[in-house]
Structures are given as structure tokens and as C-alpha cells.
Length: 346
Picture 1 (cartoon, helix red, strand yellow):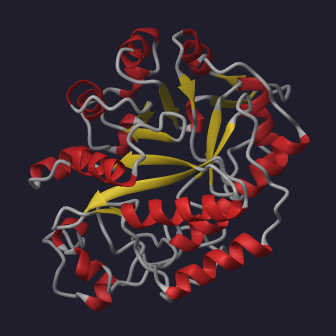
Picture 2 (cartoon, rainbow, N blue to C red):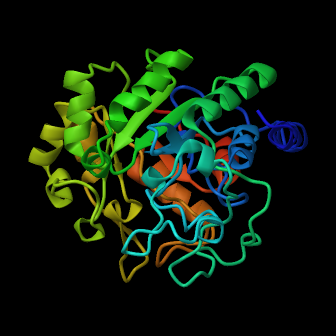
């Protein structure tokens, strides 16, 4: 681990409030979405250190592969949205103008500097969070991040979970790589492959989840992510179908839970101000599936929601979800400390 990374971890662990403790087992879990990404650039070790200090129960790792088959923690299969790849390797884009992580070796990716996410226009995706310019932050490997979180667990007396997503598995397969097997190899190497109470594996692709369960025979809990069909996720699954009773019956045959978009649960407010919710959580719970919706952002509230606390109340107390992904794990943890939720997990 590099000295500056150790330094950032120490600052986060020492200076941030220690009152945010791990939730009770029966309480909904707080999942740090790409780390504490509301405060520090996503998927950097600094963001993971801050999420750890904020008391997140689980910290998310989106994983893609390098050209030499190394799992790295990066949300996209492209590099230009969150690194300075275009400046460092200007001639390495494909015909579509994108810089694909799979086209770069780990050694090359280690030379990149990470920054806050930008859109296609080069402007900040979340204006006002923090400066855009690349600095000292880098792109970690999955193995490095596991070592980092495990080390913080030892030094701080915690047991923090990993929440790993396989990004674009069909794309990787077409490029000649088995991302599911490579990630499991790292988990075996790090001793996390049997930790059912400390690791979730998630994917938008149902075929990959079935492969993990049936062929690779992982005992780790699997989460079927649910997108909107218009998003063009790397899968042939019909996400509308997955939100129906027959669709959830199918999910229950290979997975342990679902990760829906929050707007698939929250439908808005009626004219009288009452909240309209779908029946997705109830249908999932009837089949013994956990429900972990995404993404809860204090600076991007859904229409009709007046505050982050109101949003959390709707999902935790009214909809009854079992956990949630948030860019602001400290706010979710503080809310749960002030408004406890205790229930029996499905």
C-alpha cells in the first residue's frame, strides 16, 4: 500500500466520528455506494476509508478487468469518465472514442490519476461536490481494496462487508475474459470466498448469477440487480418481468435478493401528499428475497421528496427494505441511530 493511501486511511479513521457503529443484525444494512462517494471521488481508497470510518456495514466494489485479466475497482468498462486516461494515453481510444479498461495493462492503469466523475461534456456529473482536477488518487485492484478494508477492520475492531458487482460480464466474455471466475479467484486468495455473512455478489445479468451459483458453485449470497430496460445494461434479461411475481419466482431459484432502482419502489406522491409505493418489496419478501435498492443521494432527491430523512423514512419504515446503497453512508447511519428499524430478515 502506498504511503499516501495509508495516510488518508489514518485521517479518515481517526478524525471522523466514531459514534457510527455497525448496525444490529436485524437492522437494515447501509451499503456505501462506491465508497463515501458523496464526499470523495468514487471507488478510490480514500472514499473507502471514509465509508469505513462512517460506519458503513458494506462497501461496494464495482469490478472490471484489465488487459492482463486483473480485477480492478472501477464503475465503468471505460476509463475517461473518472481518470485522466485521455491526457496520458491520447491515442488509445477505440473507434467510438472511448478508452476501455480492458485495453490497458494493470501497469498502465497504475499511471492514471482518478478524479470526480464527469459527463460526456466534460463537466462534473454531480456539481458542487468537490474539484474535478486529477490529483493523487488512483484506481485500486480488487485485491488491494480487500487488503485495505481488512486492515481497517483489524485496526478499528470492525467487520465490514464487501458488496461486489460484476460489470458487463458479457462484454468481458466477448473480449476473452471470465470476470466471474477471476473475481472468485481473488476472493479465494484473500480468504473471503466462504464468508456468507460478509460478502454479497451482484450483477445485472441473470445468466452470470446462474453461472456463479450452478457452475462455479459459490456459497456467497447473490443479488439480482434490476435496471430499467431503456438503460441498455449488458444482459438480455427483461427487467420489467423481474418485477412481477413469476419473474421473482425465477430470481428466487438462483439468487438471495434483488437490487432495484429506488424509483421501481417509490412511485411518487398523490395529490393529498400520501406516498405511492409499488408492491415489489412485498413480492420479494414473500419469496424470501432481500431488497437492497439504489442509489440514495442527499443532493439528488426524487420528485416530491423534501429531505434525505424523508426519503429514508419512506424506504426504511414504510416500504420495509432490508438495506440501501447510498453516496452518504454517514447520513443513513445517523438516521438509523435516531430512528431504529428492527425486523426479521427474510
